[in-house]
Image (cartoon, rainbow, N blue to C red):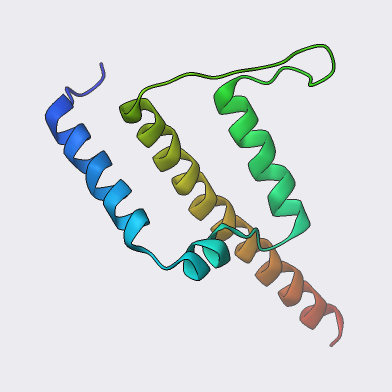
Length: 105
């Protein structure tokens, strides 16, 4: 059973997030938006494609229409996924460096 979510609270949170993003310096947004690696870019592209519903570009002209609330949810989901994936990427890098260190002994 899903917890009950107050639509007003969701709207207020989405507006707060939107205001926060709009207040950020363009250079900061660009830096935060840049994937940390080509592999991360591919994973995020696939994830967002799955959220939106992937259709192959050849033969399809996809147009997505939504409202502000749903777009805010999509943005929040993509951001949380990005944080999660970045943490996983850092852990993988750490494990690889640890393996390299133990193999070098």
